[in-house]
Length: 150
Image (tube, rainbow, N blue to C red; front, side, top):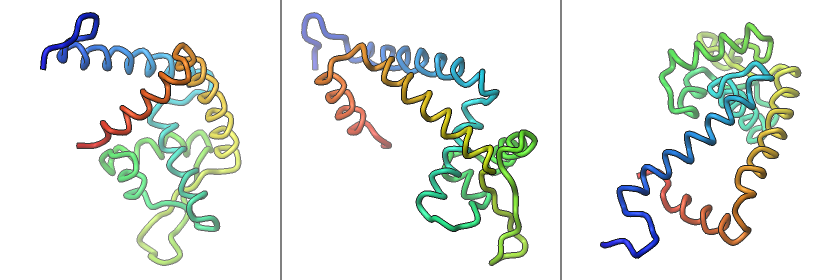
């Protein structure tokens, strides 16, 4: 399907999307720096925080569940959790159901930091997408929702 005058060609859409994503990710890395977190570390913290909201009173997530939620290899999840544990943002506990398994959960310090970073991220997101009017933001959200996983 030919592009209309003034609209990007199909091949350009990928480039434009990639450029916008890279700009957003770069600014996100910079925003995480004062918190001494990497994007992977914060994503793991978000997964742990979300799990505690989904199932209050649970003792955390198994490492394999963290890996699944982050769509990464279990070995990589272990590395990220090790890094967060050194910073005392997460803790490991024995799984009361399976003695061979370990559960991971946010410490109170980890939960507090996750809350502060989420608030900062909301502000950053509002600023980044604030360049679009409300109608354009709604349209972008609608389009991105359609482009979910293949």
